[in-house]
Structures are given as structure tokens and as C-alpha cells.
Amino acid sequence: MGRLTGLVALVTGAGGGELGGGGAGIARALAQEGAVVAVNDLAEEYAQATVEQITGQGGTAFVLAGDVSDPRRAQEMIETVVERYGRLDILVNNAARLGRSPAVERMSDEEWHSYIAVNLSGPFFMSRAALPHMMRQQYGRIVNIGSLAALRASLNGGAGYTASKRGLLGLTRQLAAEFYAYNITVNAVLPAGILSGRMRAEMGERAEALVAARRWALPDDIGKICAYLASPEAHLISAAVIVVPGANATGLGDFAQYRAMARQIGKDIGE
Ligand SMILES: NC(=O)c1ccc[n+]([C@@H]2O[C@H](COP(=O)([O-])OP(=O)(O)OC[C@H]3O[C@@H](n4cnc5c(N)ncnc54)[C@H](O)[C@@H]3O)[C@@H](O)[C@H]2O)c1
Image (cartoon, rainbow, N blue to C red; front, top):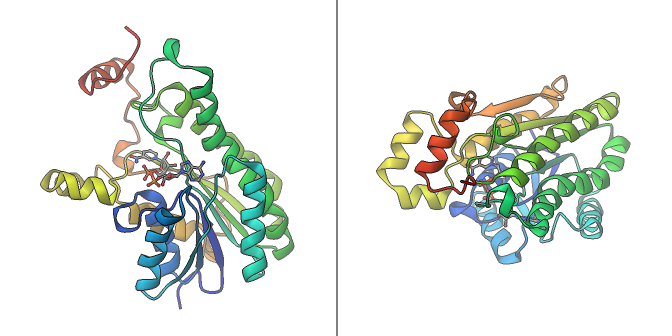
């Protein structure tokens, strides 16, 4: 019996299986603890890779493809899970618009809006659809995957990414306040760096050194933290903000250092 046996979870942006990132690690960790997991991602085949990995290890998972930034599809996805299993206990909002973006003076309206749509409106649409079921059950666990960027600044992503992840902290606190009385908790996990399966395979020994020094988190490390927050025993923890790995909690706080680091990786910082 795992700590999540009997519970039903939905993890957004959880495709990729072995080569995937944080989302896949979260889906795996929840399934290992006994939850039934709906694996969301944009493309069906990508979500399928994680489902196959989970079922291959004896867990229960199914594909739930769809765009979290589409409010109608978000509602449909939640209803699909509830129709199938009668409940939805755990929602992990992990899906994100990632990647490098230009400095503010070169950022298009479209690019700005796309960060807000996926990273902030997505968790809002998914949570709004899930909460009535969680209230009915008197049990709900929402974990929002933010970023250290929300507390500092984003090296790669830039203004849209940082603002959307900061907004997600506000959403986390507001939901935590509104729904605590229903045994619904809402927390934020802020990764500072996740070594996806693909990156780990490509980087070889350098990746292993980073993992050994506990500078980067593996997808399953993020997953285990989410599994704990999603469990019945974590019922007193709400509105928490957890930076992972902790070694990076002070990173990018020094803006002189920020510019030097950004230059080093060739990031456009507007000069
Ligand atoms: N990778 C890092 O170093 C890092 C650092 C800080 C924060 N984070 C955060 O951690 C989380 C996991 O990041 P990761 O890099 O491991 O990526 P991941 O492998 O979990 O990938 C995110 C997934 O989201 C999916 N996605 C994108 N838009 C979507 C949409 N509209 N609807 C549904 N799915 C969508 C993508 O297809 C992708 O598979 C993200 O929220 C990210 O912002 C990551």
C-alpha cells in the first residue's frame, strides 16, 4: 500500500517517459505511491510514453491529451477523469511554456501572452474545474510547479516566464486561503534546475557530477516532494513555497552575477 492508494491524480505536461522532465517524474512518483494517474501533455504519443513506463512498472495510468491553456479543454479533461474514476484528488499543474525568450524590448505581444496563457491561465483553468469535485470529496491536493525565477529572475525564459511563475505564487496563496476549510491544500514547488532524462543521457558524466553535488534535481526528486504534498498526511501544509534543490535557493539574487551568467550562456539581455 502506497501513501496515495485509492487516490486519483492528474499531472499536466507529464509526457516523455524515461526521457521526459519534471512532469514525467511527478507522474511516476504518484503512481509508485499507488495513485491512478491521468498523464496530460499536448501530444498523445508523448503522454503515452509516460503511461507505458508507469504501467510497465505495475502502476495505473492513462493518456489525457490536451492544451491546459484552453478553458473548454481544461474543463473536459477534469470531467473525463471524474467520469472514469468517480473522483479527482490530486492536480499537479506542471505544464509550462519553456525555452529562451528575447529581452523585453524585443518581446512580441504574442510571446508575452503565450507565457501567461500556459503558465498562469492553465493552472487557473485546471484548478477551477477540479475544485468543485475536491470540495464535494472534502479532499483535494493541488501542487503548482513554479520556478525559482518567481523569487529571483529567469536566466533563460525572461519577463514572460518570470511574471507568469510569480503570478502562480499569487494563485497558490489565494486558492490555499479560499479552500483550506474543505481539506484542500494548495502548495508551490519551485524547481531551480531539473535534469530531464534526455539531458542526463546527453550530458553523461557532467550530469552525474551535478546530481552528486545536489545542485540539480532529478525529475523523480520533484515527484517525491509532490507525492508527499499530495498525501493525506500533509493535510496541514498549505501555501508553502518549496525551492528544489535548496542549494540554489539564493541563486540569481545578485543582479551583477545575473548579467555575467546571462552573458556566459549567450542570453539576450538587451544591450
Ligand atoms: N527544467 C528546469 O530546469 C526547470 C527550472 C525551473 C522550473 N521548472 C518548471 O518545472 C516544470 C517542469 O519543467 P521541465 O523542464 O522538467 O519540463 P517537462 O518535461 O515537465 O515539460 C513540460 C511539458 O509541458 C508540456 N506543455 C507545454 N504547453 C502545454 C500546454 N499548453 N498544455 C499541456 N501541456 C503543455 C510540454 O509538451 C512538456 O512536455 C515546469 O513547470 C517548469 O517551468 C523547470
